[in-house]
Amino acid sequence: MKFVNQYHKVKNYINGEWVVESDVKYAPLFNPSTGEQIGEVPMSSQDASKEAVKCAAEAYKTWSKTPLPKRIDFIFKIRDVMEENFENLAVSIAIDQAKHITEARGEVRRVIEIVQMACSVPALIQGETIQGIANNINGRVVKQSMGVFCGVAPFNFPALVFGWFIPYAIATGNTFVYKPSTDSPLFMQEMMFLLNEIGLPKGVVNVVHGDRSICEAWYEDPAVVGVCLVGSTPTAKAIAEACGRNGKRVMLLGGAKNYLVAMEDAPMDLMIENILISGYGSAGQRCLAVSNLAVVDEIYDEFVERLVAASKDLQVGDAFDTDVFMGPVINQAAQKRIEDYIEIGIKEGANLVLDGRNPSVASKNKDGYYVGPTIFTDVTPCMTLAKEEVFGPVLSVMRVGCINGALKLIGEQTMGNGAVIFTQNAYYIEKFIDEADVGMVGVNVGVCAPHPYLPFGGIKDSLVGTNKVQGKDGIEFFTQNKVATIRTVNPKGENSPKASGDSSVRSCVAS
Image 1 (cartoon, rainbow, N blue to C red):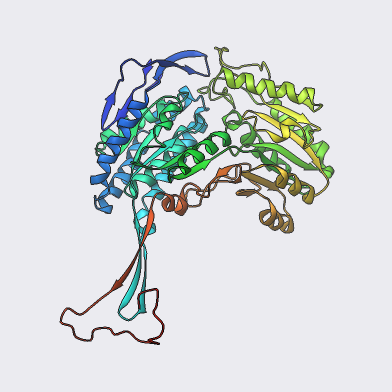
Image 2: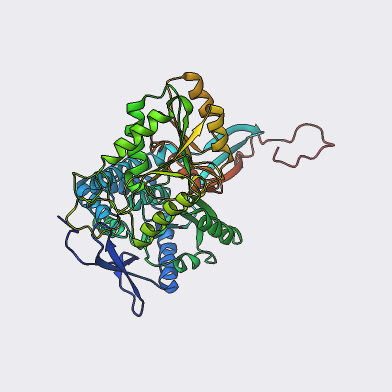
């Protein structure tokens, strides 16, 4: 199996070439399931970042003029080559990100669906025409590409974020410079081999590895027209401020603190199953993982008993072990941060009913970065656990009296990514959809991630700016509207348009 038992010396990919920059430091790359070093990642210089932008800008001159059908041919080829290399791509995620192999396959499958959506760009990029605005005058709106876009990926979804940014950007005629997470770079290494294999022109997609200084080179570069990020809210705000000073577009998805509301008529079996997937899937390291569980009094005790029992049955271990449910967290620092939050919860008076620290690990190698399912009850809205994003498999159970109490909790938080409700009551459903103060809602689903045809993104501090990813929103971000006002005149001078109306009034528009 490709990637397994290999040492990975990660490289930049600039202008169609694998580039090894001299005199730069390398960060170690670990397998979180075992704690073993499996490679090294370059901490590239700003010069490398600037060179990638320069090459992308040069490639844009040709790529933007490439006929749309030919550009879309490449998007179809990306879809096909991902399908052909499906398992290798999933394995690349399971090694350095340590997402359980079944979930890694699910991520690759979703990205293929997103790429398929990007194949519909020809239908969605069409402009508008208004005829007969005035004498022989028509109006037209044309969607055009813009230039070089740059993007930053988080560690937790190396494939999904590629899908949100790159297929849409290049299908609409732009070029791209991408910085993967240094903790999970292997998916993009494999993707660049595949993009090279299908003959994507040089400079259309470039990859540069390193720390945040890579991004700092973009803010002042006149060739860069926009920056995309999926990451933390503080980072998103910093990028927005830097880009705002230079008039660049931003599409910035920030942090989250997602609620699950359990009503008295909730389908209990379905709800518990979905909480396990949502709260513990990807070891809780995803922006739509449920973490605050608002449960009405009528079912609170039964809910806690069943959730704890089901959580205790889950096995933790190596991401490739199909007998386990959950893999490790990304690194030792993340493990410590999550354990610190557990300690904070205890100190603030929450009731720790299931402790995930030092879990029993099913795998032979137990030296990975493991945190097991963790549950607190008696959590109140003022506690740190209720307010801050833990980004780990930690659930906080909160008691509410009714749906209004749950909606109040959701509305009072600073973040507004997603929230879900479990109920069979149509009134509750419609009220929740209408009043939950978040960008994405779900009904009887644990993860309210929209399908690729719909926009993905939150509100409030979960989204900096207004642009969301995928669907029509993604296309709007990567294009600009040009408006044309056109008067047609007969070259022979016959039936030439004449001004009409009140001669004492001079119009400020074409007439």
